[in-house]
Image 1: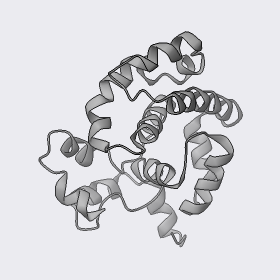
Image 2: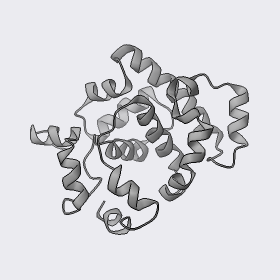
Image 3: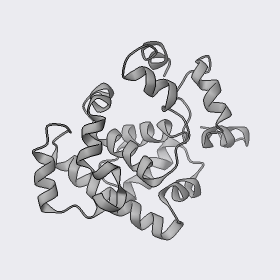
Image 4: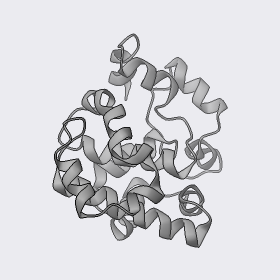
Length: 185
C-alpha cells in the first residue's frame, strides 16, 4: 500500500482518510456497516468517488444504521435507485439490505458484528473471503480484503515507514496482535 501512503497525504479527501481512518481498529456495528457498504459500492469505481459521496450514502442509508437499513423495502430501493448522491446499482443496494440483515443475525448470536469479527480472528485473507461468502452478498476477495485491512483485521494498509503505521500500531489492531502471537499472513 506504499502508493497510497505516497499519494494520499495532503489530498483533500484521501489525506484525512489515510491519516485518521484507514487501517485503524474500528468497532461499532453501524461504523463497520458503513465501511463495508462503502467498500462494496467502490467495486469497479474509485475510492475517491466513495469519499466524495460518503455524506450522500449517509443520508440515503439512514446514517448507516444497520437496524434501519435492514427494514428497507421496495419503496426504499426505488428511492435509492433514483438518488444521485450514491452509487445507483441494484445489486449493490440489494447487498446493503441483505448485509444489514446478516449483521443483525450475527449480532443476535455474538452480541455484535464487531464481536463476530473478533471471534473469527485470526484468519488469512483467503479464509476470510470464504467466511464472508457464506454470510454476505457482493463480498469478493478484493472487497473483503480492503474492508478487513481498513478496519485493522489484515495487515498492509500502510507501509512500515509511513508515520500513520506507527499510530495504528499504538491502537493495537487485531492483525498486529495475531502477528506478534506468531500467526503468519
